[in-house]
Amino acid sequence: MIVVAVVLFVLALAVGGVAVAGLIGKLPRNRWAGIRTPDTLRSEESFALANKVAGPTMAAAAGLLVLGGIGALTMSTAMGLGIALVAVVGAVFTAGFGGSIGARAAAALPEQSGCGNDCNCGHTEEPAAETPEAKANAADCGTGSCGACSLKDACQPTH
Image 1 (cartoon, one colour):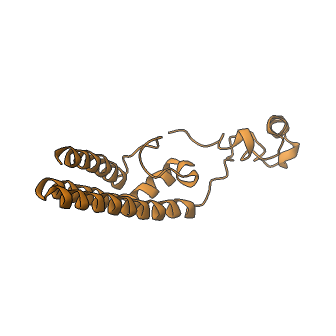
Image 2: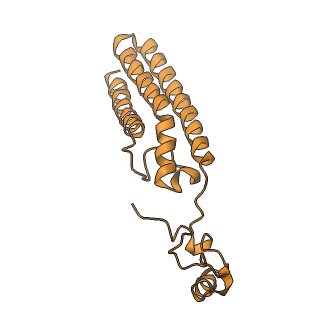
């Protein structure tokens, strides 16, 4: 039962760390931690918002894992395993619920078009298809929009 408790405590530490980093806005966009959907990964702002919204439920999931670890240590083997299992299932559902709310919050953010005044993709006084830059860029991806294909987000500031 000690192994089960240690695993739950380590998971709680990891989930709690992600929760705190998300809540304070210090969780960078990455491949492994946080809410990772197409909507949350489209910008730093949407990723930060989703993880800030999901932070409280992620912290609750970490708390459930700690309770499961304590139960595994203090109860009989059968009862401890039961408590640990209930804690893991509860933590997964709690984190999933928070993640879905965070993903919906990120989806509600207006999507940036990818075009700006300095992207040389047709956002000028002339119509987009008539500027030399727009024609060259449209030939690269087959469309007249700098927000499409390979030019998607080409004009976004880098962080």
